Amino acid sequence: MQLSSNSYWEKQYWRDFDFIVVGGGLVGLSCAASLAEKKPENRILVLERGLLPTGASTKNAGFACFGSLTELLADLQRNDEDSCLQTVERRWCGLKKLRQRLGDQKIGFEASGGYELLLPKHQSALEQMAYINQLLHPIFGEEVFRSANHLLPVFGFQRVSHLLYNPFEGKVNTGMLTRSLLAYVQQLGVTVLTGAEVLHIEELRGRDCVQVHVKQSHTAEPFVFEAPRIAICSNAFSRQLLPSLPVAPGRGQVLITRPLPSLPFRGIFHFDEGYYYFRDIDGRLLFGGGRNLDFEGETTTELTPTEFIYKQLVKKLQEIILPSISFEIEYIWAGIMAFTPNHQPIVQRISPGIVAGVGLNGMGVAIGTEVGEQVAELLHS
Image 1 (cartoon, rainbow, N blue to C red):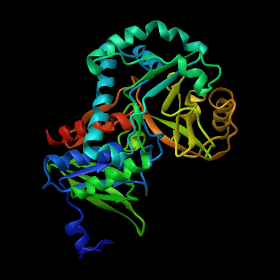
Image 2: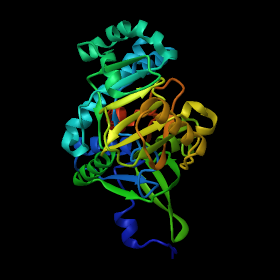
Image 3: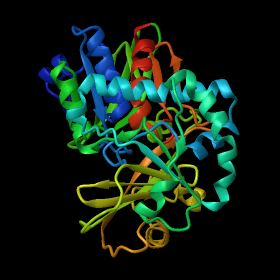
Image 4: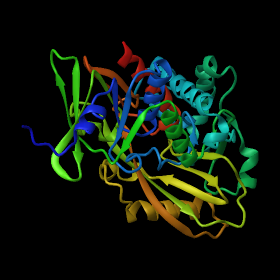
């Protein structure tokens, strides 16, 4: 006789699946959606360690973007032209697939355009704007970055040398997006379990089976799920299961003001190689970033915001973004992103039964759908 903390029914009807996806954020849910769309008869399980997605999927700023001018120039210092162009194309394709899958209304998409504030130290980027536009022309078919200096007096920014605009970016409502994506995969018959912390995975050689051991609250005995193929889509937390993956966590801290009487600008905005970003939302200003002020300290999976970054964000609000507008901060939070050495996502087969899709490099909204689809293709192959 075998003693067990789980019932006959649980082991009969909850253990075996065709595919298991570890990570219930944008990539994991997108992967599950692609799997279910291709073969609706498959049994698919998504396991999320938190009550809500733990990383950045429900905590991001809601930018539908693919990279500012200074950000792309920084990427070109790490990679060749073809690699950079491929990454931008994947981000752009991902945004289009996300909008097609769920619809603009369900994700709160607004085609507001994207702006970049060029500080004096980045003024030289203007000399390479024509080159970047030429590089991106095969993807977008027209000029991407253009001057918007005439709006500087209207927007009221200070200490800004130039303002750039591109018409292809926009805003999404992060809450609507994640709820709609979850509802979509559940409608397709995908099982999603939250509060399911994966302790370890074990590939059973010769059995075409991967076991996923998940912590249970009522006993020290884990519940073991099984599937022939599994995907690791837990981004910054993936190294807990696959230590060899070259991904590093990066905390992104975000604050939001109380409602303001008026804002002279709308849209999404970046500056300083994308390390700072802000937007309007519900009559408030959302502002985040500052990871470059303390790379070592922000390379963490700790979700607690820090006083140092908070003070620096408030200072930039006062000196650059809202120099003539009084504001109060309502609250601040943090999300955990994942970065790779070359700032390109990792989509690869780890073993016959395990595929990884991680390292979104702060572009989860844009590239998450594309990465999820590529992971699903590898699982099927």
